[in-house]
Each structure stands twice: as C-alpha cells, then as structure tokens.
Length: 305
Image 1: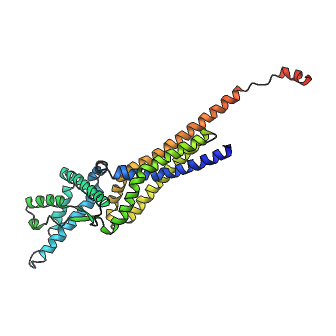
Image 2: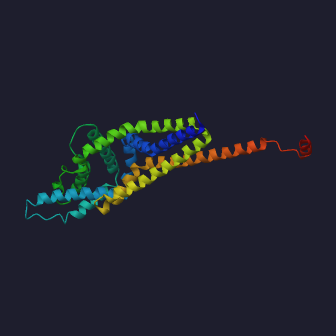
Image 3: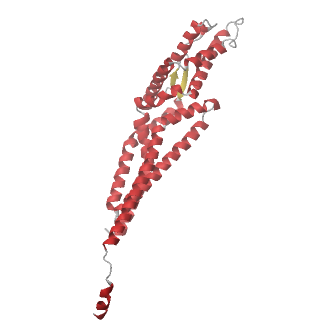
C-alpha cells in the first residue's frame, strides 16, 4: 500500500476513534455508573450531610406537613391556623436532618428511587416515578408528639410522595436509556479498535501514537466542557432558586466519576504525546551522532581521484 494512502487511512481511523472517546465515556458512565445501585447510593450518601440538601429536604417535608394539616383544619372553622405550629415543625424537621436516622432514611430513599427509576426505564410501565417521604414525616411526627406540640397528632404520614420522573417523559427516556445501554460497551471497544488499527497501518507509528494521544486529550477536554455546560443547564431548569445549591450538589456528586475520567483522559493523552515527542527527539539525536564526520585530510586525495 502506498505511503500516502496508509497515512490518509490512519488519520481517518484515528480521528474517528478520538471522536468516539467522549461519547463512549459518557455512555459507559450511564451504563456502569448510574445504573449500578451500589455506586449510586455510595455517590449520594455524603449529600445527607450537605447543608443545601438538608435545607431542600426540610423545606419539602415541612411544606407537605403544613399543607396537609391546613387541609384538615379547614374542616373545623374554630381551629387555629398553622401559623402557631410552623416554628415547631420547622425546628423539628431541620433538627431531624442532622441526625443519624436521617442519613439512614436518605440512603434507603435513594436506593428505593434508583430501583423505581430503573424499573420504569426497563419495563413498559407508564406510571410516574415518585419518592416517598413518609419515613421522614413519621420521624418528625413522633418527635413533635413527644414534645406535646399542638396538632402534632393530626400530621398525616401518607401523601408525602414527590415526583421524580414524570410519566410523559418515560417513553423518551426509555429509548435513550436503551441506546446508551448498548453504546456503553460498544463505543469504548470501537474506539480502541479504531485507534489500534490506525496506529498499525500508519507509515510512522510514533507520529500516529502522538496524534491518537492528542486526540484523546482533546476528547477528554470536550467531555469536561460538556459536563460543565450540562450543570449550568440543569440548574437553570430548577424552578426554585433556593433549591439550586442542592441541585448543584447532587449533580456534582453524580458526575464526579465522569469528571475524573475526563481529566484523566486529558492528562494521560498529553503525557503519552510528550513521551512520544521526547523519544522521537532522542531517536533523531542518535541518528545524527551515528553519521561519521568527514575527514579533512582525505579531501585532496578525493579531489585527485
């Protein structure tokens, strides 16, 4: 095969391989990171101690409790409103989020939500996915009752579900998840095969390895940029500005592995490119030193001949 054709084919294969790198990393992260219940719960566990997350959970639980109590009090016109109960509920909910029981309920709730979301994506169910805050509400009710807070016994434990995945988005998300589940394995494998083939057919393999390494580093940088843009867009979609710090903390916890992989691709790619450039420089120096220098005393003899 002519050298020009080999170089063109090698460049095309390497370019395609580097293009698949960020998409392969993203698909593998979804398939083997988010889809794994243990990894998901482990990633979300530290957020139970995050003040922004604790505040968002406390606001949601408190609003649900006060709404339900207010609905029940409307049946009794002579009953006092929830204004007098609000400080006690607020203090009880926020103090509960700082206990070990809340950490346990947080882990159990995240595992239940993860299982429900995966079940909805893998089955044909059209029901919305919700998270049940009843365990937290029950703990708060027990604490308020022990403190003899008025109306504590009227706090309902049911009807505390918060929607996580709307039913009208299940079909679209199910199709996307099916594609990512297949791509999570085949995209990284295809990228590796294309890169190896491109290096093998290249006329200068050191140059091909350098190009592959630089392309991989560029793909990692593109992936890191995509994660940063995704964070901005995700927080912009949060309706309540007060809950955006909690949403940002959750997004950062879920994408921590993806960010690590992206920067690892950048560092490893640049390191391999520098090593190839350095070895190429040493090879040129050895070739230059191996050429014997011309002897000036032999020049007249060569001229006479």
